[in-house]
Amino acid sequence: MHARDLIELAAVVSAHGPVLIHGGATISGSAVEQYWTASKCRLDRWARDLKEFSTEAAHPTPEWRRTRWPLFCAVLEEVLTGEVLTRVFAAVMSAHDREQGTEDVSPLTRSIMLGHLEARTRVLRHLVRGPGIRAEEALRLNRLRRRVERWIDLLVGHLAGEVDVRQFAIDPSRAADFGEDLGYQSRLSGGRHAWPLVQASLRAAFGQGLSPLSPNADLNDRIGTSVLSCFPPELFDSTGVFRSLWMVRLTNGTADAEGMLDDLLGPEKIPASQDELDAAEGMLDRLRRFGTC
Image (tube, rainbow, N blue to C red; front, side):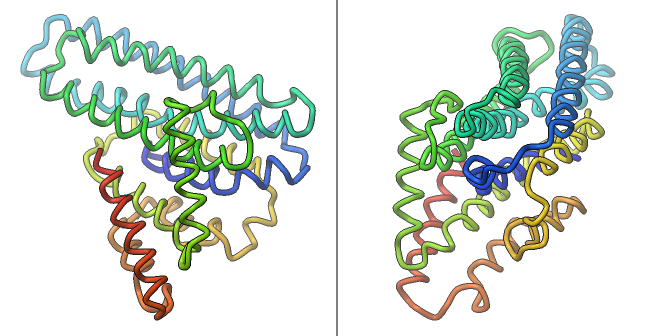
């Protein structure tokens, strides 16, 4: 599973998080343990890879840049983009425990988030003064970091409309603003299209520009599977997000953002009401600008 698939999964977790938070269902302990184990293994790999690459990059050669830098770059991207799911899932699990008056799952997800933040700090150090990274490469990765941070705040902000999860945002005030905006848009005529447009915009924002390599595809797959296993099985039998085109694309790795946008704006998806069409197009325009930041 590629890192971008986990970003899409984070959007699903944000959309359906309230089902876990308020539904009263018991979350599978084995699924959370699998999430912790796979995430911990990935953190260990990241630490080893960053140390190894840092040593190699001290004296970069053309051969190193051709054969090793692409993998190094993919690891850096994976750390940065992986933070989206890590924070959103930790927010949902924390809110679930708080709602149920327990401490069953949140300590594990919170510990993974803290480990991820340490890995992120090491990546940022590489971008600032790491050997072997050219200025244009550092600039591109920094732009990716900023984009990731904004999407974290949007997805956490969506949850903040249900529970207080501001501590899991990058910028709590920005997350609150996003939450209020999403809530307002969902109440407008055509508001039922707000969240599908968010997902389509997220896919477009990360659909290009990331390395095709997936250094930890096996662990990403285990992480994604364990997160999905925490949701009630009946969601997979519904006509909601889990049975949508998104799920097929996540499984098959054939996400097509532009096609999704066409689907959302096509005549079969949006009624002929001009008010609904205007609301959907306005939301799409804001999200397009947002996704390029």
